[in-house]
Amino acid sequence: MTKKNAFFIALISLIISSCDTNKQNTESNQSNESMFIDVPKIQKKLAPSNAKVFFLKPSAGQTISGPVNVEFGVDNIEIVPSGQDTPLSGHHHIIINADLPNMDLPIPADENYVHFGDGSSKTTLNLKKGEHTLQLILGDYLHIPHDPPIYSEKITIFVE
Image (cartoon, rainbow, N blue to C red; front, side, top):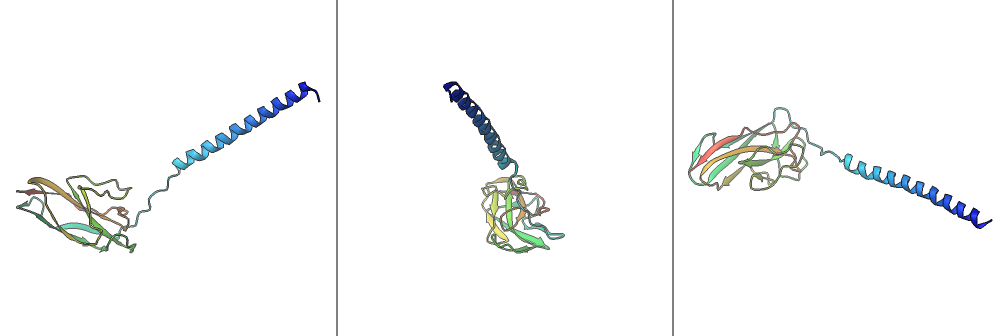
């Protein structure tokens, strides 16, 4: 084999291996892209038929002095602590001075979205003087709203 033939064979081998690498890179990129496209959806628990959540205390429009005693009521759903995957159940969350959260994600936990993962149905809020809105929403054992979501009317109260 001459040096010229060896050179051409090496060049052709390099070109062929280069083409194969591009194919592998393309396949790798497609695989990475599907990793972001195929994000699994959160599985929502079905809400019981006619399930409702509502405020027992306070009443809409009520003026309150001092700490605000809040009691929650429900119809057609069992209240259990978070972490218990019990069918047709959930636990309370109170929304203070905020809108309903994204129903496709777990309910946030901060000063505006207070969780009652212990299964309780009442609390005392120390709110500043002024106008405040309150709303209830039920979450499943992982704090995810049901399908369809179960939430109360938003009420406005006044603290003096």
